[in-house]
Amino acid sequence: MLAPSAIATSGFRVLVLEDDRFFQEAIKKGITLTIPGGQAEICVTAREAIERVQQSTVLYPLAIIDLHLPDGDGIEVIRHITKVHPETSILVLSVQSDEKKVLQAVRAGATGYAVKGDTSLSITKAIEQVLSGLHPISPSLAGYFLRLAGRENTSSQNAPIERLTTRELDLLREFAAGKTYQEAADSMKISITTVRTHSTNLYRKLGVKSGLRALSIAKEHGLI
Image (cartoon, rainbow, N blue to C red):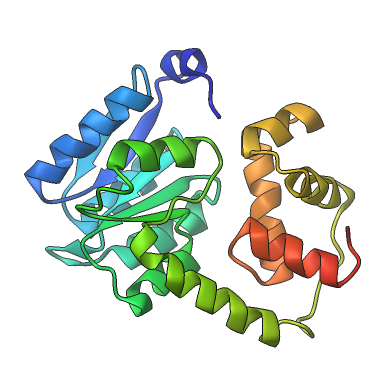
């Protein structure tokens, strides 16, 4: 987890794509409670968010994205952020909870998915979990992901695996020990940005979208 003092001194910027004023204020409050000195940069359209990412000279460590927008779908924004800045953590905050849309968001690069109005996973709690290196998910969606994991488990047995680097294997072992991104970074004596980059490469090589699936496949193939 990022230390509060480090966040405050680095001018932690959060890209927020949300056109509803009520949720804009709720997100700002969540950021204030979890990130001392954090700055919410509000965008209300997909185009505005993409332009903001393209023009920014400083990385956004966190992006909070709605999916239903006046000019399109937030999925395209997630894909763009993941392509340009793969180290950015992306939290979806949306009223949409249908399985197809959730899966599209995760495959596009979302780190977590919170359904608007879910009292079991508040905006503040979801932000805290993302900053801790976790993958928050609304409980109402948990059953779907369990079913999906079961289907993937039967279909990924023969998935091709590229050769992993020494550092990527080291990171797998850190994850296997239950460490967060920050704890892994401290143990490996590298920055959390580098950890996220290694993690992105790991997921790509193993053909997965989460640390749990990466560990499962790695163990199946004797990598750890």
